[in-house]
Amino acid sequence: MDNKEYTTTQEQLARFAKAMGHPARMAILEFLIKQNTCFFGDIHEVLPISKATVSQHLKELKDAGLIQGEIETPKVKYCINRENWKIAGTVA
Image 1 (spheres, helix red, strand yellow):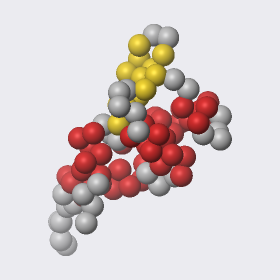
Image 2 (cartoon, helix red, strand yellow):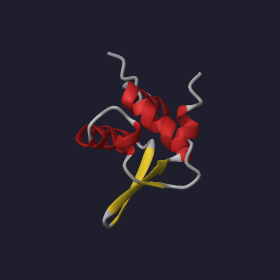
Image 3 (cartoon, helix red, strand yellow):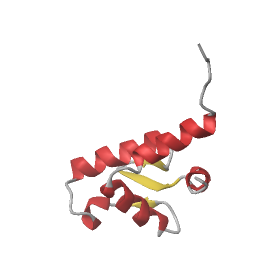
């Protein structure tokens, strides 16, 4: 039996692809990419989905490492994880 394993990069890219596999998440990423700084605010205002749904999508993107989120009471600020975004863009 072969004991081949996937590379760390392959596993990371698969996580990115899974996280990007929903149109709402792609819309969130596109929105955050356009921000010069980390974004405070209500992302749900630019998307046709509820706050709770946006929160779920943000969690998926953050867990995958595509975005960063930081709680600064009473708000959370989000921005693209630029290092991982570069990696995600290198899929050949």
